[in-house]
Length: 566
Picture 1 (tube, rainbow, N blue to C red):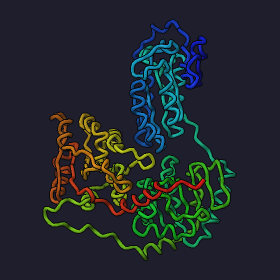
Picture 2: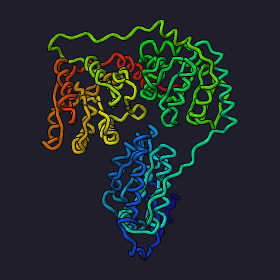
Picture 3: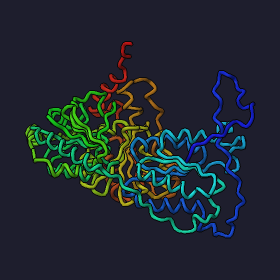
Picture 4: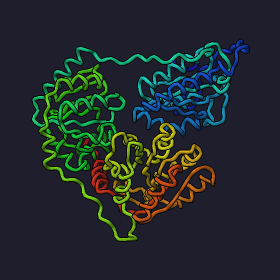
């Protein structure tokens, strides 16, 4: 969509107070067309039907590769959903956001509409979405609608980012000849590597790694958007190096692999993983993201001169050359054929590794401990399950879960919007009904988006929700404590029972001890397996993982750094 703005129609529009910037001018009013297509069947040839068919077409894509869609009303709906769209942008997820826009006759009229902030400017929502989407189209007439819809959806799939489509509310049901046939399947041109750059990058990287004594591999979250999980596995199989993943890449590499050593997360890494990675003399980092959270307050001890950093379309080697126009999956596939096997670092790991212990068994009736809770969740995992981890201490406890082959894992680390997991659970379960989803959600986060549970019940979903009730925002307590981190307690099971209202299949229970937890899990996996199961776990306010204590202190220190001297 070409962005155009109308010039003021009279001098009065520019005679505002000189201390204020002039208001943005409304988008131009489209030309009025006498509608000649009334003879066309609107049930088969309308814009709305075309969009619906396009979205049905990408459903298979969504299940396999993570695309999705949402439909909201103008401004109030758009600005409500924009937080989720920003999260999808940060995680490189293609989401098609469709907005029911103003009547096409209202553009350029200087009218004020409901659901706006009271200004005759319909571009406010569009300008907001320009910051968090890779393509925006505003459809005000049907002649260009077919092209604009297909442009936006294909861009979302190609760029793996959200897009914005605004459709005037009076157009969706009208017939038009451009929609008279079924949509032609998309043929999205694949991205290609520059062959010479690829060859040079592979040769340089192979020489760099083959000279190293104890190299390691680290997988990052951009493996997913680069569709390079399989080729990263090829490198691991060929090289014999130990393999770790960054926290936001958990689930992108099989944890049953013989050379997998856990999560590399600085001071809160899996046991003995930090020592192997940071003592290596060369590391290949595929698709990493280094922010203050993933770097534990910028405290990682990685050195640039030892690193090969593989980005989705670029490879940087040590302090030396960088190669552009090189796709990650092409680079990793070619590199796997050039590496000499070297198990030195993995042999070192096996020598120093000590298996983690099991939580101490509490006395009968003792208050449930978080580490006991997650030891039981570990036993629930299989190839037919997936874990959804909410922002908070669940980040750290879920990282310690060992995923069986095929077990899914999702969490939002880059954007970190509390309450994300409730909506994510709803969407994931709807897309993957064959899986039993297990969500670990804190009470503070749940209060933000609890109403989505009502939709889960209405859709007949069968997920298991562990609501961890410790009376506050525990992760924030460890970063910056204060009375604002204590929240009003809810009767959470009663809230979900109210959503249920004896309509649909839903089962709730409240547990305070390990014995009650065992019984609840047995019920959820037994006679209640066809229900949405909500298990509220009462734990002590200060019961946290040791990793959160360490991580919180380091992130707090990074946040409180004084200004640099001027």
